[in-house]
Image 1 (cartoon, rainbow, N blue to C red):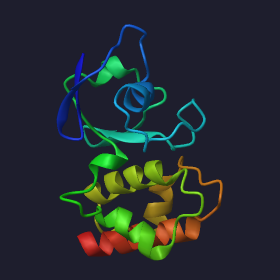
Image 2 (cartoon, one colour):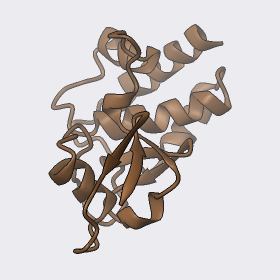
Image 3 (cartoon, rainbow, N blue to C red):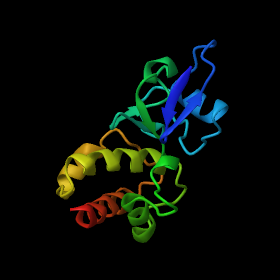
Image 4 (cartoon, one colour):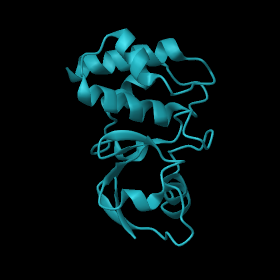
Length: 151
């Protein structure tokens, strides 16, 4: 089956009915998207599908045919990090960084809808993305700063 990932038409094997996460990591070698809980509850595996953040671990790969999938690897442009990625670095929002790809994907979706969110709107939008290192204040600040840059 052909799917559009990060602007490229790619082929995946769906005979074993893989999740989108399995197809991305195991077949396409896009390992930035992480496996967290396997239940779509932690947010580590979020990718954008037609602009909507979805948990790749519970999304059957066959459901994204004809849609545009963006992973953490697909956010940079011409070697430049996306403003959200850059803000995460500048604010030092990373510790172990395992949750970061899903956090950044979710933040990008938020800022595409509302480039000037309040800190409470950021907290509300990020509900469902779990950071085991508890860098939530830095994550909120990074998203807030990226929003200011994008506004």
